[in-house]
Image (cartoon, rainbow, N blue to C red; front, top):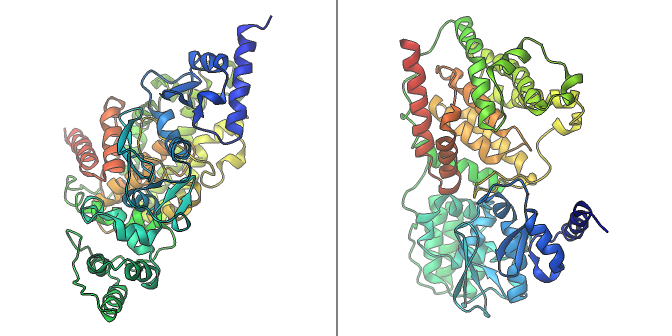
Length: 511
């Protein structure tokens, strides 16, 4: 007779077969009742709705949303295909979000289908799906991305609501920048006799500095006897970013986010108090190491003590005996933090000596990351190749609706970040947006939070601010502020959070 462990192993094999086929949305018919109940009982399956499940982790706490957010798009693609076959398409607005490289999980996903019943399907963690019976692009004119059926870029720009320009200006500006020339959009405009939309698009293109496209839309529509009146649908006009035809949608989005958010950052941090003595500043950095390591590692969930941090700093740490230590992961993390901190200290010194902080971070951030995990290589838990370059697999942030960009987009996104850091003239913007955009991109499989805080403090030093520790006691507030910036495009809470910490740090140094 099979043991309970053998029975669970059999059920896990059945689940693995589905996952090996790329199946994320699991229907009740995909597994036997015995396998389903066993997997649910042991935490390997999570209910989505009646008859539908997603894989989960047995160590997730009750109410944990990560499995759902990680599975969201794959689940929706499978569920919609099952419900509507190929007769469905995401709304123009949601299509534009995806064209613009934004895979954030929406609170409500809007879907069009001729088979829709104009109803709402409730999904886990406050999300839902609203299906509407209304016009769609023809099947041959739909685009497909990761199983999702989308309005093509031009059709989505024509069909989207005018209010969307005020609600999501960054996505709209990014989408407009993706239009290579006027011919891409003139055909659908003329075919649909969209004179009013043509005027709105002409105004939108002019707003982002593409006057030639705007003029060609107006001239062509008028030549076809359409009465077109140009109207700028955006609430404000922003300074041009240069070439608005970036190869990477995400790189363009990041530049536009930076431009929009910096206005809420400039002047919001306390005035810096630069130290002219480089050695004195570095002594302060050395003095804060233990406190910084304890809080930064604790934020990431490592159970470290001051004693452990001091032990690894003193070299009282033997990687050969690590596996015998029940807390070996904590010890590895602490040792890695010490090694990375020494490299970050060198980067700080370069900035204090006058080097451009954006260039320093660009050149050195891979070294910080590598040192964080070198002890794990020494212990045989990782391969050295695992630390080479940016991630090559998708990652997800626990409890976050923000979905980090695809692996293909990371390199362009990081290039855009360091370009922005290098050219930014305001120190407070480099501090706040440097940290936020780095963790928004999430370029590594692990260690993004620690590396992002290192980046923040290098920017602090370059701007004349003291090294600033984010206390583990403020973890929830810290993560909530980053979530607001990622999901709502609202940088104000994070700016205020950093400003308060910095003020407290400066006050403590004057006492």
